[in-house]
Length: 243
Image 1 (cartoon, one colour):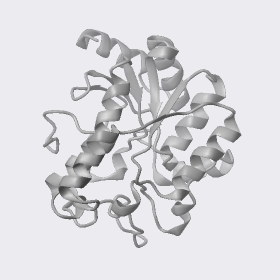
Image 2 (tube, helix red, strand yellow):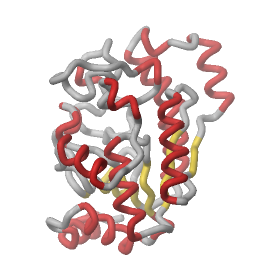
Image 3 (cartoon, helix red, strand yellow):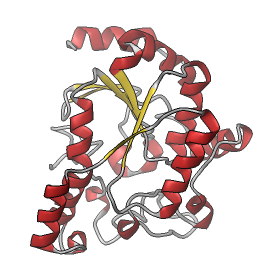
Image 4 (cartoon, helix red, strand yellow):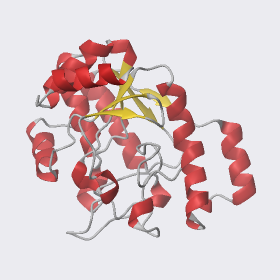
């Protein structure tokens, strides 16, 4: 997509609400050319509900890193059952994982930022890129209030890392809005949210946080805040995009 087309899409979307943004985006790109990337976070569950209310054929996919907590798999099953839809599950390349573990050990991510990023790259980025290569745009649940690395998120962006458009329909939603929407619409959510886990990733890299702490402080808690991204949501050239 050329930058002129991106600006055109931005002007069409304007100040629409999340439903409007998703409706326009699906129509603009075509259902088969845009997809929601879901980790079954509270944000992604909200987006799943909004999308499927009017677009039952929308494409939703997730990445099974092989290290997810059981509670995340439970949400996958509950979501499939509630909405009666298929959710595509992507996996890392087995030889890559085996070689990485053989070389660095099963818990390499605790040793350095570089090794943690290598693990994220093999388990998340590679399968994600494989999927995004078949799309023109992807939808994410990124919000500005999630962390310092996401404070400049906008509704429509050019993803320079993966070379396609990125849509963030709830970029300006608050935690309170997310919780209220889930409760009002009886949406399946990860029970770990009730146990002090506002942000949930792989089991070894996620822990509960205290009330009032940054919602992503439980992710890779041994690292400095500016490093706390797995690489899925960092554009080349961003001040935090050192991948």
